[in-house]
Length: 570
Image 1 (tube, rainbow, N blue to C red):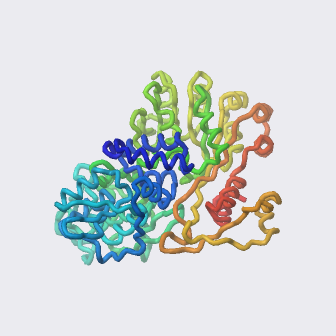
Image 2: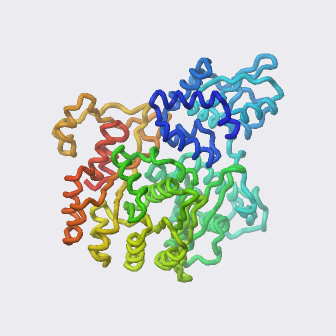
Image 3: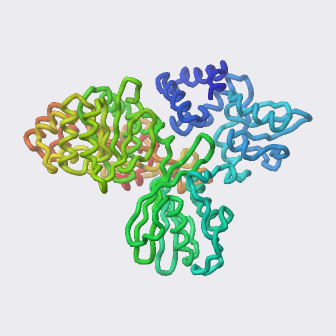
């Protein structure tokens, strides 16, 4: 990254992106810093984190270099130059030698300013290099299709114990011949499932034993999909392997257990898995949650907030004290929202402490504490200790009981910024939930600054989405207004499905209800008003509820009406 950011042409193409309005100067500066922190190339970072079109970036680079843009769609992959080049090098730098003429090697790259990549290919091939500018997503797909990237992943013996008894897929479960190590079929099979899950963008893996079958499912874009059906007789061995990797007690099969797996994908990147085992009727079910540290570096612009919602969020973060609460079901992206806020606040002059159960992603410069109820380290105990540690900002993973809520409120009223989550369906219900827990109405009204309710909806694939023909009465019944329908650019899209996506969707976007606690809402809280009264006051103040925010995303062509119906309660 150092060589890349020092290049004048790098500065030139960055300037073009800003000048052409594809990204603001502030967001670009933040993206460059976050890419440097995560040790990522800026081009894929801009594409996947800031959602800038791969084609737009390629065109700006082409203009800056004065070189034509080569379309890989028309390229015959049989011409790929493989001789004398390390596949790991190609996968690591995302570059691809596509032509050779004499001693000149033409290398496809999405970022010709990345001098490190060009130097590595030049050294490996011992040839002169000529960069050819291509779209990053097409290049990445071509490399994935033609190279086995599994070998590029590095598993550290320190992080994963690869020594396990010999596993023969064709042997009965009661026959073991002793250790054989990394070559064992079960070991390689589990490793492949974990790597495939990362590649496919899964958030969770489910290993499920039943009476007559065994299945493995991935949750991709919020939806579970069946991936594999290993032989049922391997149920115990698969569970044992996963428990060994996550440092659980393999002899304990009667009680649930928690563990963690760390996979080193390269010298600079690692992915953690949070593992939970659960004894079921026909064996142990294991669920792995993928914890990618780069998700904490997304930046607020990648999360899907509308401009007015983003402004409310940023205003709440800038306040020296008070509470910022995020609510939603499990898997709705609350942790990423919290970490995004913490990253914005993470400065040298600020003391930040968090209590989490468990700590999902390690954040440099933030004091993170793993809650452990077995030894008495509860959320409330951690919070009490934080207040003796001269904190500026405190994050509590979840407010679960009255004691934690009271301490959090007290901290918010005594000069600290407190961030936390609750499990409620909407922002207004969050405030009444605190009152039902036993927190006095006056304390809620004077300590809570902002409440965010959120859901995650699947994004429509930009390559194959098509206009949907829905009658106007149905659209009005769904929640659209007459004013919406009269807008000249009003159009609802529906999924189709193509080679670039899954069932017409690719990736996810946040849908938010961002509610500032205004004087009117504070008055309703102190008068013990209910969630409906708070919701009505929120609407009068111009704050969109979840349903309306989802419909805005539909009108923008970001998601479908089916998705909004799926993730919102109406």
